[in-house]
Length: 376
Image (tube, rainbow, N blue to C red):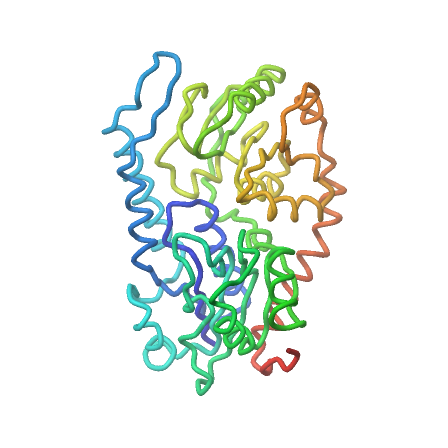
């Protein structure tokens, strides 16, 4: 049986790329002929290509601007390595730039039996991509034998639906099975469209990534891994430095370059990025997937909250009893609180049933006998 997956994959964002790999890998391991639909909307391509050319100002030891050529080369390396990861580790469909060409993947050339939408914020209506009905599988017509499934799709920070409500109602009711990644998305779907939606884990929880992490020894001294982007507030910088100083760690940044870091690693591919997560002694991140991989590798970590990412991260941490690892405000005792060890036996006990539930949903949704849902 052939399964097509439409998601955010052609990006320079590590989390987006790895969630795409994880869902593809999980479905493939069940014996299905799976591939990622290599759909690249123009606005998304422009956005990620522009990031290569944007210089980043970093003030620090010598109060200098990062050399533009160095930043450009690192950005270009990252772009190339991200794309190489996709073409070498994942089966992709032919390249699709215009959404008008998507129906051909279902009707003619590939003959998908199922198309899966997800995961990630593919249903967010206020992102750089805006409202794109392709991610709601409008290209899979009702006359087609191809079934529609969503896995861990997310509306992201979208909380209210504007002009899209009628279109979304029509499209979402056509799904054979529907699941979302977070409580906000679940509330939107259940309150607005249908009651049978369920919440599942991000697909990165469903695979272990062992086959793609470089199999070599870590030769670096113990380090605090910083995975962040854009501006870090002075009090946040002080917090990060205090954590590192108290436990004797160097600071390595694998996100944006920060001059207070002892080492800046730009241009990494997803496999190398995972390697540095795996071998970190402590992790500070502002990313949802940075939080997930901290948990997967059973690391001591802190997530510094950003409003656009706070809800989905808080949702996850609440579920596994780690709400206290989400820091919204730096207080005098925050450092000491964050240095307390995480009880990963408790975390894994809470995660295990959620992983089983998520896998069971996916297997049932893909099963050939699955009929069109009738609960609306």
